[in-house]
Length: 183
Ligand SMILES: [Zn+2]
Image (cartoon, rainbow, N blue to C red):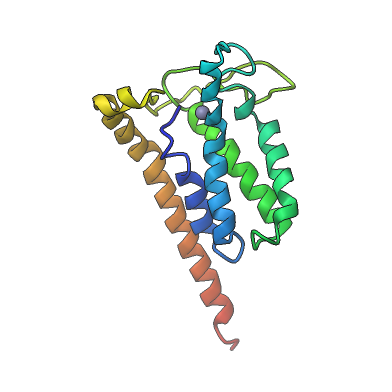
């Protein structure tokens, strides 16, 4: 997996790029949680479910279908989330699917079951620059974590920051243009 602190960076960057008018703060918070939810499947280790099973790590919880379903389940709460139903659905879907995208970009671990339940095939991208994070916190803290964070800084945090800045500047530019008096 990518480390748990890097997954929420994607919805955060998207929210900054798109703006609070579309993605409210409560929706952003839920999106950040959604970006981490797939790794709750870590509990399957304790239950003795093998990696290879669709219910093992990086299995069904990392699929696009589950992301769509959970995002859809959140739509009735749009008013509480202070956002439009379509924004809730799209933002939460992207937040959760981004988890699998980062995992499939890691250089170790298991492949991701993006297409479950339609296909049990596990996938990795060809280009996988992110150092896989150890599942155990102990191993993460013992030096390996620094290596992981370095690669995530380079391949997750920096591109996310750049996208957020580009989106933010683009929005400001558009707003300034629409405010300019007609000649
Ligand atoms: Zn994961």
